[in-house]
Image (tube, rainbow, N blue to C red; front, side, top):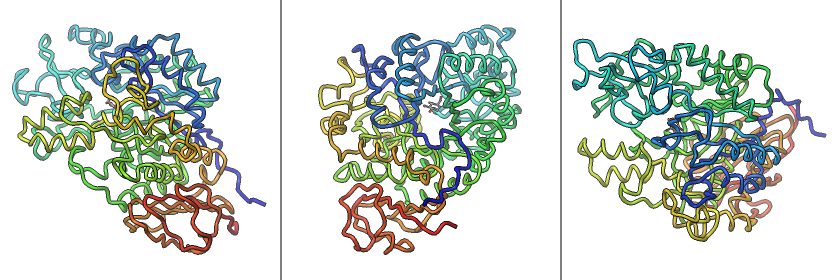
Length: 575
Ligand code: NOJ
């Protein structure tokens, strides 16, 4: 008899898996080379077969597309390139019919500069909406436009200063991202009310929650102090003054009361760059009524130096230490997202795995290790196929504003072109944004036209049609991992114990719930390695729940082949 204890709480998303769709690159139904909503609707069976519970849709709102949709000019409509509100309703119905939920991207730290709110705000310093954004005069004693006259020395996440001069008024406005993404002023209650009303409108339409873009940036230090100078750059670091600012918890609690209170079965996830474990606990502690889970970045910054373009090899022990801290820190209260990929990250099989000889094994092993942690796993489109980084050559191959701005700035600062391109090839967000590879045909079945960014040439062998037909594919391995989260309570709810913290090749941990124990092993190398975990001989005889290689001989010492991953399960004395 199993002695699995009652699960600590009934939050439905603890057993859920989320799939992220980046609409521009998912499926194009009308041949304009850009993905769209009917394209997604036509492929819902792919997601249903995979078994995911929730789809997070990157922004589909009207947008000048300066930052690929994260610059929104109307929160309550659909970008015409992507379709109409009717198309949206059809997509939502298609998901609900298949038992899947739909989570919208909520981008309310900033709008587009073409949003009517900003157009009005900019129209004059006396505008009733002037205070909806962060307008400031030049630095004391300086004139508008003078070098260094910006109100603070902060650097934008997309290169250059965070302040843009409005010639007409002689004042600057704040934009943490591109100059076409002015930051909303959440200090103004009218801004907050307008955002909450918009959120309620989407929930009333039937959506199931929000992924909240850089939501820990909405409360800023209103004194706007300069940041400490960044090495080798004419800017300072503004992040201490904009991440998790003084009113962040107050704002999220207010949002909860105004938008979510009394509505059931929703999901709220806060994208939070730079969030600490301690802060995450405050954000996700259910009794505080803020959000359900954070989406944090520590583990995807371990292969970087001072900037994301300064790429270092990953040290496995750093990855284990980081993920372990989050597992331990949120063990009793709070909740975390689990991911390798999203639309801002290079493809994990190229980054932390092997996208050559061992691509399939590495993709499966990486998925296994991630999905067996505690938290809610996210699958980014194409990850379930083992899609890889793309072969970019020159700057003309890149589309992303962050990548292109960095290139211009780095070259102007005297960096060698090849060195800059090497950083872009490894880290550019465009690696995640090449079209979904549906089949081996022209443009991978993504479009009948010319894709907005070329498809990866490896779609001839890396594609959904082939993967779905092959029981040994990465797709079917992910299907099994998702099934395990649904069927094995220990995977969703068990305790976590890291093993072999210093092993540079083997990632090992145990999960435990009542009398059920699971051992997870992943070889992050192309070598054949021993797995010297405690009780190895007994584990070698345990039930193999999932693996990416032929089952080892019974009684063989516990070890792993190149990029091998395995999950064992056994019953132990309850205690
Ligand atoms: C985070 C999003 O994931 C990214 O794609 C975007 O560029 C920034 N926030 C700004 O909205």
